[in-house]
Amino acid sequence: MIDLLGFSLSSLDLILLLGAAILVGMAKTGVPGTGMIAVPLLAIAFGSKESTGLLLTMLIFADVFGVSYYHRHANWQHLVRLLPFALFGVLVGTVFGDLINDDAFRLSMAIIIFFSLAQMLWQEKQSEVPLLNSGWFIAIIGILGGFTTMVGNLAGPVMSLYLLAMRFPKNEFIGTAAWFFLCINLFKIPFHIWVWGTVNWQSTALTAILIPVIALGAAIGIWLVGKINEHWFRRFVIAMTAVAAAVMLF
Image (tube, rainbow, N blue to C red; front, top):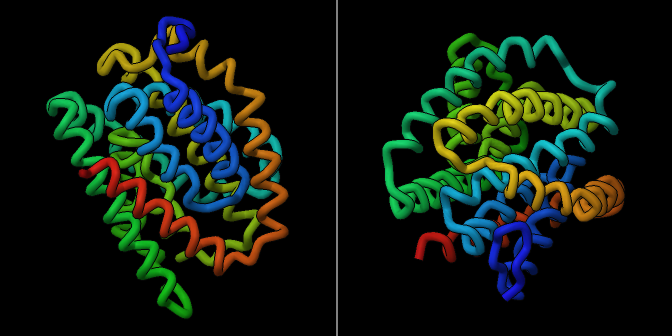
């Protein structure tokens, strides 16, 4: 066992932690789905609910890398429409997550992952995603995005559905998502500190140590976006996410 900033980590825990940091960095610079794989990895190492606070600070550092690289490409018109509903979804997720025990929380996270996978598989079979620009669609996506990001940091597929529906080009897709999640994740911090108690100086310090690893993941993500065939990479991400969700569930 390795004692690090109040955490007792086995060799496997350390490997999972480093792997999650790389995956989070990759997710924030344009590699879809890798952030979802990081969720169950940290849950296995640190526990389902406790891992959400550790992952939150990790995501914020990664968001900074994503915003720094793609900040010019954000579509603020869509961000302004989504954010109020997403903030409300965070409040709903805060209440929901504070009322259930760890086993129920883990189950809810697994269900959300499988739902998100089903959504991703449906998108894979569509030649094009319909443009749903109505107010109700924006409200549902915003609330669901805020709820899922608070419950388990799992709003990536929800946000992807909206951005795909808007037919954003690649850079605008990544830049808009980067700003959206930076704003939402910063909003979540007080609830994780004072309501759930999952963010403290130990978890923040542990994440700070991982900044170089997150930066490495971000650099790998930027490189991969231009190098790997998107069709086969998305299939790989979906398959690995299904395996990780099954491990969490069973």
